[in-house]
Length: 483
Image (cartoon, rainbow, N blue to C red; front, side, top):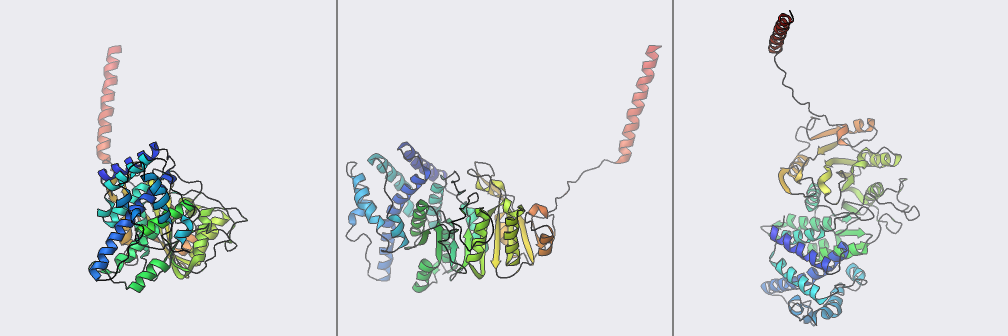
């Protein structure tokens, strides 16, 4: 988590954009992303030069012939020159960094630098300099960007909202991505799942802090392993820059609706991680012919899409609204039957409704399934705390089930998982089928009865005798007064 000073500076940056006339959060994050990207380009160029010097190899700067596009150069320009220079020189240079046919080059073509005044640009530059992004470690840099993205606090028209970083990390650690996996997020947004997956694989292939990946393997990881799709072109640009800022020079981020006829990648992916839109719907004429479930609900269609996209033995970990678990329409039952009969449904992790606050209060769950073999039993876990308060403030707290979830999931076949009074337990396939494909944990979990301390009956009787005796004595005294 970021400390208060960094949060204050990011908040200040947002306030400057708001007062400067850019009140749309999506537009603001896009423009801030451009500026941070410009700064990190030079930071990365300097680091690459240092590494090349250490290895004794020839180095060519990306700024060769474009030295006036370096952050350290143009950020010192006067107010009468800086805005025009960034808009007309630096930004066009930045847009053409990708190869001619790259996704980056394609989606940056229609981008624009829209800061309205030189004063706003200078103030933004000063605040970004104060963040000391270069000096921060990779996790803190990610936290800075995530905190910027947290301003996207209202669900979009298709039910889009940002997945908290600690939930993404939990899902990545549960799925254990490996080098060689072909990985997809079919509704990638800002590419949070892909970034965390990439970092997990890099850390998993290190010895004493040094990468064990050969240059050829690193190239495969960077260019042929991570794929993201999103219908929103602004999100695509942010995702591209997010991945490039994390070291992937030519990300595979594509602006396409994966539920439409234009997408067909059946049996291609080894791992899918996603938090697809919940409340969206798709025009029936646009819907892919590969989607056979009769519904327009995107949360159900995405599950079928993910099943279709997985190779045999491929695994998927996805966030779904709680309604998917207990929904009893034909479409709901069909998708759950598919996940249980044509897949091994490994886990259903129920999450509390506050996880997505302040911008959504919906109750959700994480499903983890593997394609190609039927389910024998499903592991359920009821998450009660995720390490943060479940109100709009989301303050950090000590109670956190996530470490326990990771540990218990890994050891689920070695430990007792038969006690339905606990947070976690197995439910056999046949029982779920008998319960009409219901996957809500409350259908199977037993609530512990509160212990009641009963008083000794002899004591109660003696007290009652005493009260009756006092009452009779009172009546006797009353009778004497009447006489």
